[in-house]
Length: 269
Image (tube, rainbow, N blue to C red; front, top):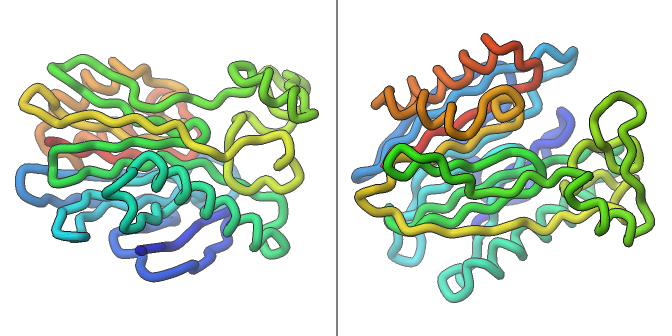
């Protein structure tokens, strides 16, 4: 099993074995490649008066005779086990469950903080698994057309689940739907004070990477609040270098006055 580093409300919790290829804090950019897959990332701190909170992983490693590409936002380093090869769906779900448990176990140190995540696992450059909790998003481009691989977990969308757990959804204060008037996503890690009303299980999808598959975009909501899926694909497909493409997406979000922390990974196949 490989575990990593969790980032939550400015507090770093070292839970395991490695954190290679991951970073937090401030602005950043980088790139890498393996065989026919190239990736690039770009991060930009938002205008809010707090340190950069986004965390990312972008790396390749070997496991069980396979090459794994691990690409992740927001504040979660995927844990995978040997049973991943037998049942990827169950393994990913268990990894998210363990992540939530680990974050909750550190609650006295972290206060009431929480986290979202989007995770992409690329196996041998051919098989892609994408999972998410919250509002970070994964978008695949196939022949230039945007395909959303994740589900935005919004309070209004999952109102029934929240109410069945004894919670409520309110647009007060402000104009954004929030769980118990506090949290703007219906699934998240941590958030102990809201835990009985939230889910932390991921939605998981998979896709085969073939000659018609162009690239994958993983990004935090700082991009998706101001740029549509297809607009993002149209920007990236014009730029061959994935790091420059990721940076261009971040710049476009800033130009459109996105105020959140902005993080983006582009994986070009």
